[in-house]
Image (cartoon, rainbow, N blue to C red; front, side):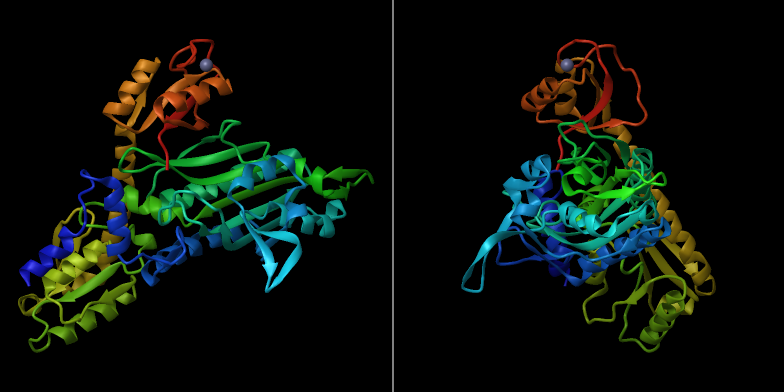
Length: 479
Ligand SMILES: [Zn+2]
């Protein structure tokens, strides 16, 4: 058994040796996805899907709490409709998948498989919005979209992914702006309070903003390897789409006005963030709030009389306070420990004949490995505290990691040196010129992640050209 147990752990590459391979190993060994026969498409396995459902459940609750309704729009977009907003089609054209035939018959107009649904919502809104009484319209859609990506990785970049996309219409530009910020805060809350993934809030530069938007707000997170991941975006669309699609309403004075719109989305990428923020060389580490199983009861010497009964009793009791499971398979306890560590189960409870005798059980934390002996009586009262503590510790640890990997650069030499020695976020001043943004990317591989809401003046001059600086920008290599 020992050799086999060792093997289960050995099959993960150490993250220090090859982070990309470590990620792939965790995704497969924790049984989150399987590959399909179409390159870049993934099968989300039950365990991976259960994580998504927990994220979805919390986000959906908050989306509804902020006044939005769920709808569902079609998967296909006629080419002529997609082309109505010029910037939008230019932004998405390179990664659109087209349907040209229905059965044997060639279609009169080809249909695109939605890469995002702005134009579909716009067409619909033009039909249903007429008066100021129809506003605001606050719709959200849970669905899938397709983007024909060249290089793909499970959860991070795949041809098809799951997401939600909010699409709203407002009477004024100001209201749309408030909505854009409100939904960014909802995303930030889900990430920090539920996924224990700290986020940096800010605004995208014009280069990085959504195709067709007035501006894009973003939350960015730092992964364990020092690369950034865009965890959610919220776009103020202004009235550009409304003008292109004729979405107008009669205001209180009887005057015809264009609506002001927003759109916002988060995707199954968040699962990639979870893996890369919390995971370690033993596998996945899940924050309790979104873990499919929060506590796994593992009987020790389960063939002995009374052990399995006791283990079941504990599981049933724990189920009243947490999502508890029991592993009564015939694998050895050591094997089970490794397996549930791999799957990131926040807590395991070991119970064997000696524990029963002493009226106790041993709880082991996935995040720290700490062993805690608990009396059986106090089990239900202690477990929720432990889970809460794990949740908090994970956020704190991730915040500390992010801070450690956030550096300042005042010159390009400093920029390159820091990116090499301690990759992560780099705070540097920027003049606002696209040319400098391009040059930084070309020379260093880092892109502008956002202009943070909390601005600081690190220096007076642009890190790239030396001219007067306009903004502090966070830069990083990104997924
Ligand atoms: Zn510059």
